[in-house]
Length: 176
Image (cartoon, rainbow, N blue to C red):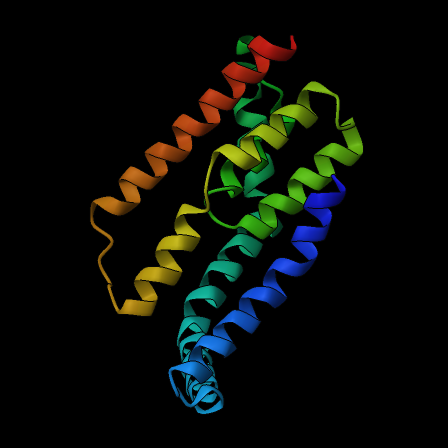
């Protein structure tokens, strides 16, 4: 464990030093290249802001309007019948939209139910087995100027759904 801690402390400074040494050896103007890359990064971040803002507003409307709670209350009888806790549904719905929101929900679930509870284990597994499909499509497709997502959205959401179902099945088998 001490070796891993030491490696993780020194690996990034060593990589930066290696890049600087190789760039100097190849006579690349390192500082000018860094500044030029910084300019590109800032312009890309500014171009992504409308997409991120739209997604954040959508999430806030979904949570603030009470639509999420109404949906959970509507499907609770079905979830109870198949043994899935209703507390996990907001995480399953938000996970494809925002990683930060999903991490916040996972933290809340773990704090309220405990890390070794079924819900805590299910939330942790679900957090690691799905991805932020809408975030990824918004940011990456927006960065390169693709307006039509085509089948990428369908495939991403199907993969998220399969990840959620697999999480429920695996956590139920392993921990119940």
